[in-house]
Length: 229
Ligand code: 0L1
Ligand code: MG
Image (tube, rainbow, N blue to C red; front, side, top):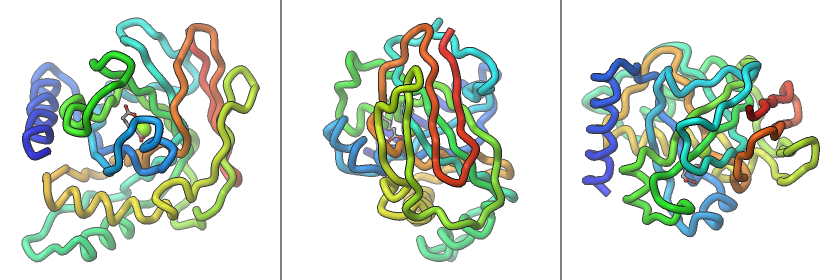
């Protein structure tokens, strides 16, 4: 696993060297439905670059993707940078991350994999930047706010294909901060101001196909939708 994160970091350095900018971390396998779909059982962390962010009001192009899937997420935003301190513990860092979050939004992640049909081991997918391809963020809402137990609907072409609640994320979406703190202490992820933090899919992912309209509804949030070119 240490090698896998080292490979991921090397890939990030090479993307930055070719002009992309790192903007924040993303978590994966924070829900049972994703762990079951992919046959794994550990939370993983990947990186996001500015170039991976896709505006919701523009059709998503499948060009350049291999066999993409899409999944519904929550996204936290850091209002200020969080720097690691020498005496940090998982608890102190988790608290500082949580206190630095100033907004939360509904999001969707487009995942894609160099492994055929997403058949990989946990270290494979970490090295492959946790299948991160693109992501879409809805309207930011004030944070803190209650995030437990909110119904979630995931629709393709206006048909509900998955249903869940926000508790799918680790039983309580706030536990994302604990997981991110633990992993940041281990692997040194950077947490800059304005970082979007993808909390991990709340349902299984679905294949993306041309012409689809994909929508995520989370109670209390504006719905987020995107069309596929
Ligand atoms: O949000 C997630 O749980 C995504 C995990 C990414 C790995 C994958 O499913 O390919
Ligand atoms: Mg995801």
